[in-house]
Image (spheres, rainbow, N blue to C red):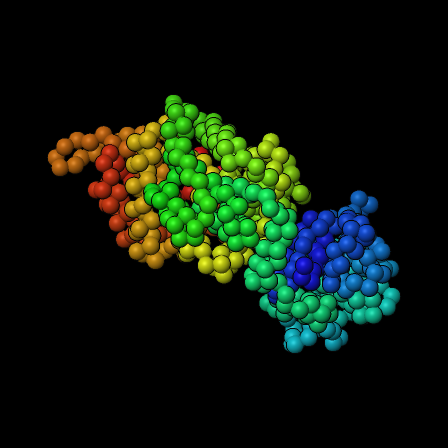
Length: 511
Ligand code: XMP
């Protein structure tokens, strides 16, 4: 394993961002809970530790704590905001409630030369977000920077390897924040640049071979980038002993099964089992209109088919799935804290009753790192650039009953929209663009004849992560082409509407 930086999380909204920044410098980082005991920390042999911010206050009794022995362990430590206040608190400094929360931009003046600020010229624009602040630095510490409202905006004790910043170097608003993190990693922790896609691939292939030995692995391939890269890695490690199962639930995009088969079976020569289960899904979905009922039927049916297939293959001991790091962190720290809006069914994360050992080669990665891996491994760009596609597929884009005919109608609309988005060069600007088939008919007129046909809604959104989204300001000309092609080319559609709702309060998918 490459050199590692540990990030102790005290509940800051920016913790994941710190991890991203570290990895951008090609240093591997892992997030652990703030109160992780020193013995567990030592098993990681970290080259350095970053203490995150927090909504808590170190002055309060119930403040989130850290193992205090860490501060004399000799491991270099960078405390950010709350992390800095923790250092001050434990080392004999004074932390005080600020009169008002300091939030936003501030001008930082460097007052003492510090390895953390190497190569930077004072003053710097930094981003503050804190209630408490350090007013007296602990004995043996040097104040290295100040702002108008923070007399101790940065401090350090170089002999002990302890550094504190009142501001957030990880956010983009701190102009040279990346440089500060870079200095901590390379000048203070002496990390090299060992975290690269190539080193990751080499290490992962070794790990998979060691874990699987001569066993068989099964993988649910959906064609999404996560399951594709997972399958690619396992296939590279053990070849034919990986059996990828691709289930066509009859709710996929236009020509999706053909594309997956062509790429993974014919081009990449993977051992791919294709199961066309469309009929089974249509039968179970007949007459169902409730969105959650649709989702649960599709999830259940998928597990059943997957289990049947595993039994048919026989002798399978491992299940490979494309779990990503944010999934791991989320299920560890914020379980059950938010209401369920929709039951998200992810093809990868299912058969817990199958007693298979898990192989999750991507569980330390973020989405863009997986995309980078896909590029290095030569995955077809179609699969890398694909927009997110929900597990229950087109079912959640058909309002009302699902019938093979309605699925076909939607597939055609989807193909047309995809073509136009590409033609107008909008594919990289949009998070998603897709049609929704509504369950209502409206009156139209075509060639002097009255029509009473379907309405298609166009949904096109911009988003960073799918958690929030805004409707895309598509050019009128593009909307015009979409509308006229949908109505002219798809039988049974006589009206197109554009969805101009943001998330929240709406969601991206309609169901
Ligand atoms: P919503 O509709 O909740 O969607 O705003 C947010 C993002 O998640 C995708 N989505 C899903 N992805 N399984 C998935 O893997 C699902 O069941 C599912 N439902 C929604 C959606 O396409 C959007 O990008």
